[in-house]
Amino acid sequence: MKPVGDGELVRLEHLRDLIGVAGTSDSIRLLLFSRSGFTRELRAVAAGRRDVELVDLERMYHGD
Image 1 (tube, helix red, strand yellow):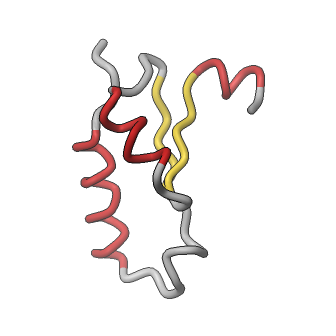
Image 2 (cartoon, helix red, strand yellow):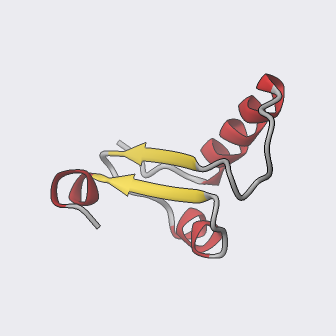
């Protein structure tokens, strides 16, 4: 399996926009789950955004 990349974040943002979720970007969090980890690029993007959280197996089973 390949690590999840920033393409999945773009897809998730697109789906959020299609749904037309009301509220500010601060009130909506985008969570990406992966059992095979995340690319360096996606980790860098997520580190700079408050609305994106990456959840890998380590975090899922052992917490923050």
